[in-house]
Image (cartoon, rainbow, N blue to C red; front, side, top):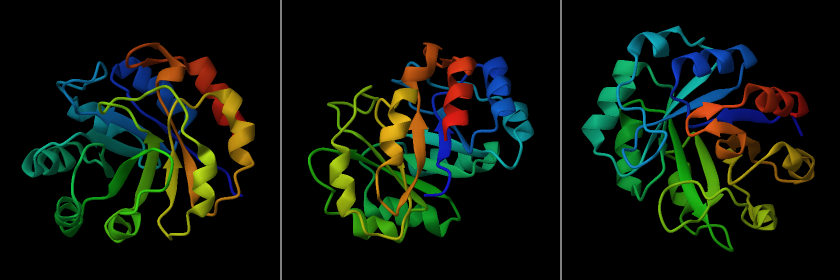
Length: 206
């Protein structure tokens, strides 16, 4: 398996963002969902424009309206939009037709969602997270064994309470589509502020 990509989500504090940039993750996620404790209320356009092109900027949205997503996509120069709510296939298709890169999230229960193949054409990545009653992270794993049945061409990111101690186990997963991991709360000092020492250790493990 090639090196797993690293996506660090829930960034908000400018100084913390620049510390993270020095670690060169593959993706940085910014949450534009008002109910999240990591909500980016007033995004700094200058900050977004200075993030190196090698690091992909991801805007995370939950059941947001199309025009708002497209406006922020253009204004902030996002590389991907992460659809973390109940957005349907037509919504994904419409965004894709407007040139938007898409990471479509699926909340996992005890089997692979039947709708995966339908979304594959309109998604650059899938993100598999643990199912919760709402749209936030759970801090818990789902049963990763269900991923062995994955056979689509769309690569996916694995999420759901991942910590450094999980990297060895993730490395044992023999799933062709596994492209990387998405981390958030397990690496925080407080909501939206990451522990760089822990993230550095993680990056070295991948």
